[in-house]
Length: 397
Ligand SMILES: Cc1cc2nc3c(=O)[nH]c(=O)nc-3n(C[C@H](O)[C@H](O)[C@H](O)COP(=O)(O)OP(=O)(O)OC[C@H]3O[C@@H](n4cnc5c(N)ncnc54)[C@H](O)[C@@H]3O)c2cc1C
Image 1 (cartoon, helix red, strand yellow):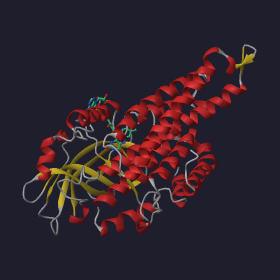
Image 2 (cartoon, protein in one colour; image 1 turned 90 degrees about the vertical axis):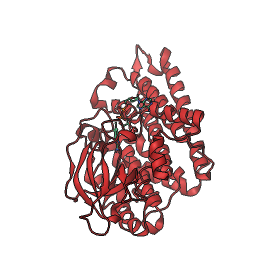
Image 3 (cartoon, rainbow, N blue to C red; image 1 turned 90 degrees about the horizontal axis):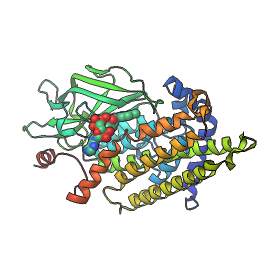
Image 4 (tube, rainbow, N blue to C red; image 1 turned 60 degrees about the vertical axis):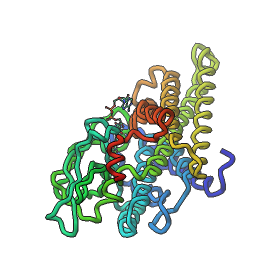
């Protein structure tokens, strides 16, 4: 990564320092407790991590996506789970608000978010399938009892990753006052009456953040709680989703690199059958193979990120990274963990969480097969999405 500029290097070093001093010592405990301590969130906020990708006029640092990815990678070396939660906070939610929001919404939401005062969550998944939005049941409809053209939202969502979020961006089917139907986005706050966070799931991986179902029972929304166009806001922030996928993939690479670094140390200090473990038959080969795969994945990711920044990226590039790199990294983590023998299976060594987090990353932000389906749609039909055409048509009319 010699090509990083001075600012990007400074941010990478800052993140590496934070990861080493603040994250690494408690990363295994975060996994065991399935909880990220508030103090860590506060420290991350004080460093400006939540507003890293947010424009300076809304309290952020306005860093580029390369910086966001190198920071994500460094944090993921210590805790892939914490880093995964952070990309949603750094990229997906604030970028969606920047793309869709009015000036008032951006000032209100983004400044409180960048300071860490009001973190955000992004909620799309429903029982009928996360990406299958044509079958989603949550509805935002006009409400004549709400002052000045308000709406109400009813329904339920699954698997919403919240951490300590207070502001939720909720994608749902919508109807405008003219009876037109589409897919929009509402801002729902934890304080809103009728909004409930039911419980948190006990998860295989990504345990540093709470994930669970949320529900809306006749939650009243003012006109200013609708983000973007009522009929298209739910899918017209694709640049935020794309950037977020790339940052998410950076955490996958950091995940494998973190386990690789620990495995190198372990292998080099361990002797087996009177020999250095590294000299045993498959070990050196596996290390070399892991190093080659991580290096190749990193090259693909940053090539894509730089094309994204230059505005020349292919629509399906993020899907390619997510599907291909995600699965490759998982395979790498399985092999690396195997080198630890029984010690890798014991939770006390704190290394099997990398493999579990790598698996969770192949499903969170869209399952691998869904991303391949999107790539196929782009190849065969020149359509960079799985959004059902009736929704797109209705929204466009
Ligand atoms: C740790 C974690 C955190 C999450 N956080 C959030 C969050 O904050 N907000 C949110 O909205 N969602 C969140 N999710 C949900 C996540 O986005 C979905 O789980 C994921 O997109 C898969 O959708 P699904 O669970 O509905 O699987 P399903 O749609 O039931 O898919 C099951 C399987 O079918 C296959 N499949 C699915 N779609 C296709 C397709 N189009 N073509 C071919 N095969 C396909 C895949 O193999 C997939 O694994 C989170 C998930 C996890 C695991």
